[in-house]
Length: 283
Image 1 (cartoon, rainbow, N blue to C red):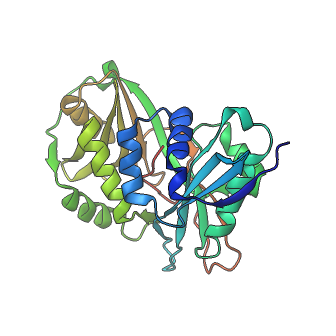
Image 2 (image 1 turned 90 degrees about the horizontal axis):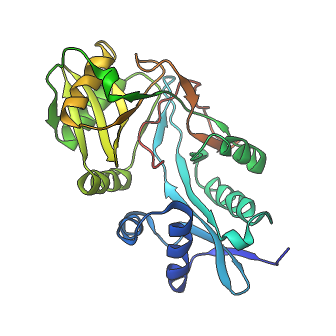
């Protein structure tokens, strides 16, 4: 195995970091630059250096505040976008970078969180550092033909109004309050790729477009028919498929799956409840 060191990112690393990101995730330079503008602070990225160059990297973002219903709160960091040069994979380098990010984060926060990008990675993060699921979600994928039926009126609302309504609907329930940097990145994504914040008879949803798929990243319908909300979204956002995600404590798709994982600080006062709703995340 090649020797490597783990260190904080440097300005001269930016071209290598951009290439690692593009090769791993396929995003273009505009998206990466927008991400940097919101999140790339001095201590926000750790890299593994081997053969004189960065060969793996992961970012440490300000995470949301978690509010369990017992009145406590938990601070978090969000470890994000682990990428390793294909020529250096299989040597434990990416695992070492992730562990270093978690160790750095837990010096400051109650939980170091990570969102696996696919099902197989849940076991990877569990083995790498003992991460466990701390958030669950209802999730389903629907074809356009499954949205047949009467279509209620859906109205666009501002981001500010959406977050006020979100806070009201989730008050007293276990949920995560996202940071302003996350909201800025979300606004960038919606502006560039399409999407918006929707209200349907008091229920709300946050929507992003991803090619021919409409991603309903948060649907909150505690009293109404969540399928009515989806039909209204379908009228506003024609797409081939609709991915829908909602809290486990509200009506929504039948399938429940683990969502965010975390390594927990043993000194934290509280623990995340099993039905915690995370909501917004980059996945």
